[in-house]
Image 1 (spheres, rainbow, N blue to C red):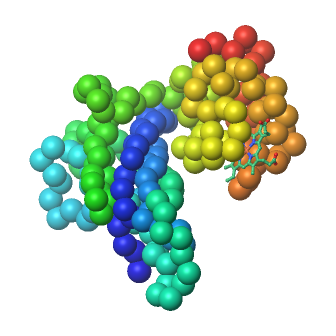
Image 2: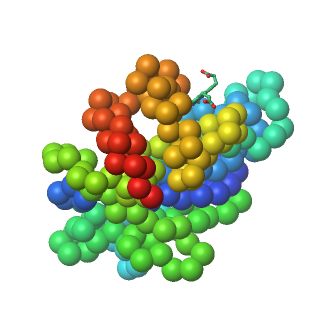
Length: 208
Ligand code: HEM
């Protein structure tokens, strides 16, 4: 059974300029205790497209079983979802304009395109299918390779934040060594092409 998690803290949107465009939505939030599993973003089902073009999603998970021993602490969790066909998401010429994520205690909105003050910025990323990125930059090409959970975990246990340019530039050799020996991320190796891109970024002098 899926239940809304306690809160949503951060939404990260990355527009992948494939054809048609895809939007990668990454969200971090907190559960009200330990013991939750299967955290995911679950889009609302619409009978009619919403007038504002914003897709509502619940951030849900499976709560601990009754009687299971849990710690009554807020536990950081993350989830992502890839949305297809951004320009015509709701129908011909009816683009997806944003994502609103609901948790039990709050909801947060991130808009595709221009982000108004106080809302998360969206990044444009060069096509992931076909063609090398000539001059990779941290903001456009490298940062999106690190998931919200990578940044969160490594920030918690090490000296760097994978979403902060200075940190990644400083630890680049350590990071590359782990990517190449396949020990990081802890839950599965990167594809060769992503490791090659990271290497090219280092070789190009680590442009911001
Ligand atoms: C692309 C994503 C990631 C990169 C580049 C990365 C990089 C690294 C690096 C360079 C170290 C060595 C410590 C240091 O030099 O300060 C390390 C250690 C560690 N990382 Fe990550 N990490 C990533 C994602 C993750 C994830 C998703 C987890 C687990 C949920 C994780 C868990 C750990 C743990 C437990 C250690 C310490 C133990 C060890 O050295 O093997 N990392 N990581």
